[in-house]
Amino acid sequence: MALRISLSSPPSLHSTPSQWSSSSTSSLVPTRCVDWSSNKRRVASAISKEIRRDSIVAVRCSLEATQEAAAAVAVEGQVTEVSKDTFWPIVNAAGDKVVVLDMYTQWCGPCKIIAPKYQELSEKYLNVVFLKLDCNQDNRPLAKELGLRVVPTFKILKEGKVIKEVRGAKFDDLVVAVDTAKSS
Image (cartoon, rainbow, N blue to C red; front, side, top):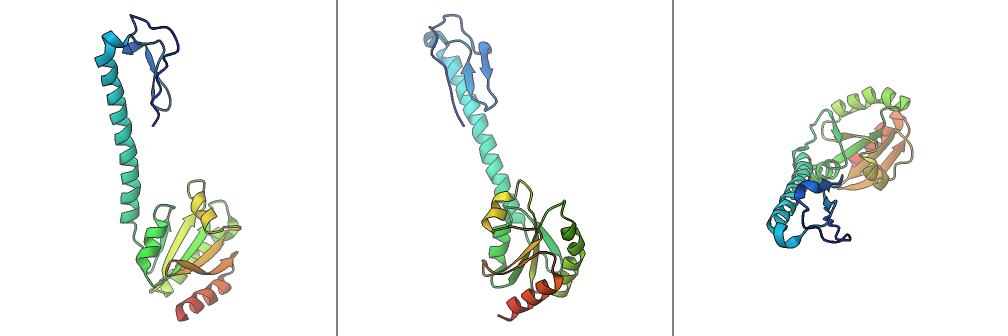
């Protein structure tokens, strides 16, 4: 949050808060200077209301992300859609179980072809956690963190560490990688 007050022009005895404009960053920017002696209470009140409103919004946003991450749970026998906020909490909650992550995009043809087979695989291996991450603009930081270069990419994790990777829609290679991870 930024708080900007311009005091560059000469003081005006008739400036009121109604002459102020609110910028897109929700900071108060007077269009004219304020006579601090007569409007001190109104100015302080307007500024404190703006600060409180911004603080509440910021806290609410971080609480929503935390609540979303806390509420995210992978269900055995099905594929769970994750985001950058929910991925690591689910991986950490999996403990020593094998976690398989399908990194895909909406526009990818091979991703769409392998999706039903991936779902069938999740129904077959009930003691493995199967996740999907749409590598869109919102989830780009996580995709970059995991080293995504091509879609689809399947990351196999155990105890929070990537132990195997399958690039491309290679279903047989994915099955072998999951079996290997389970046996290790």
